Amino acid sequence: MIHVAAAIIVKDNKVLLAKRPDDKPQGGKWEFPGGKLDDNETPLQALIRECREEIAIEIDLTSCQLFDTVEFDYGDKQVVLHFYSVSVFTGEPDGQEGQQVRWFELADIERLEFPEANKGIVERLLA
Ligand SMILES: Nc1nc2c([nH]c(=O)n2[C@@H]2O[C@H](COP(=O)(O)OP(=O)(O)OP(=O)(O)O)[C@@H](O)[C@H]2O)c(=O)[nH]1
Ligand SMILES: [Mg+2]
Image (cartoon, rainbow, N blue to C red; front, side, top):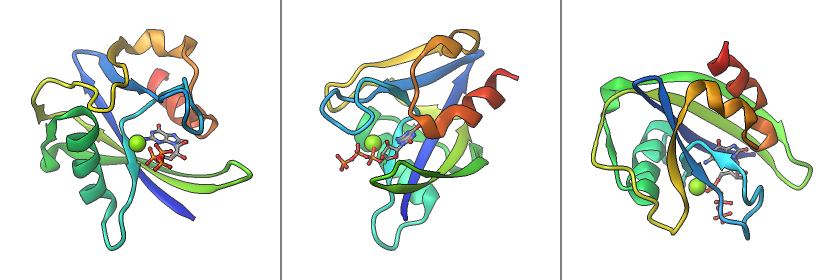
């Protein structure tokens, strides 16, 4: 099982998404910023580190709340996604690996392509 932490960053009814590089698994799809937990790292620690490394923001730990934990089998890999909602951060989000990072109106994310494991999360955000 691969554990992944992902941040649902919401501000003014908009949500921040990053586009996965085309050459990666699930390439070209939009995702919540985040990534795999390092050894001995908690989901929250990984969340903070990944937001720093991927999009150059500092998230406020006290504003993070577990939104859902999702297990999914991609066939070649099994993932456990720890989704956290994040409401407070500092810095201007900027893709550090050349990836597109954008704010979307919540109502608009319905039309985007997400990794399969995100289906339920996206539905819950739209509800
Ligand atoms: N960050 C993120 N990962 C997601 C989401 N949904 C989802 O299924 N994943 C999966 O969780 C894993 C994320 O880990 P990662 O971002 O470190 O993976 P990667 O493929 O970029 O890293 P790698 O190149 O080191 O393998 C990938 O298998 C990705 O497909 C999501 O919303 N956000
Ligand atoms: Mg990542």
